[in-house]
Length: 126
Image 1 (cartoon, one colour):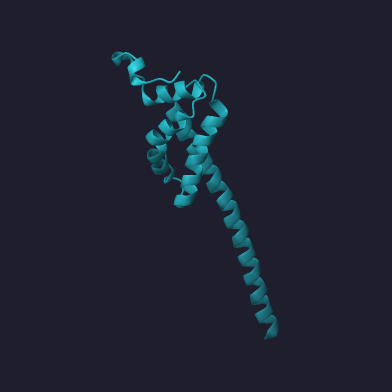
Image 2 (cartoon, rainbow, N blue to C red):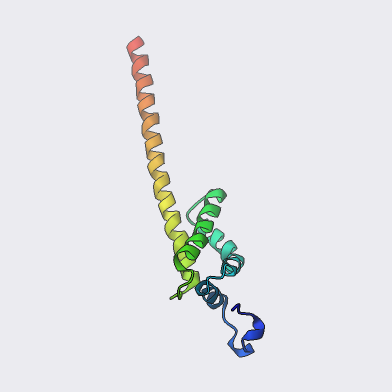
């Protein structure tokens, strides 16, 4: 059963979070559209606290929606959808930053070794 404004008394209109949770429990993919419409821009803006690349931000935010659907569809959702999504974006952003630093230091190490090799080769020629 799909929930519409006509099936709910006017004084009992659910919040967007409640609506998303209800649709999620009903295994209704419309919950993703509602969640996306309500949270996509705020989540992208939030992710800019951690990341600079808009492509990375979009990937992480989209992954949060996919995670919500895969992990909670067909089951009662306990808690706040908003908190879940913002928490997922923060955690994934921090993980991405951590992985990026690992690559940065790996790249830095390779460049440093290459520079040392060049300097050593130049010194040996003299």
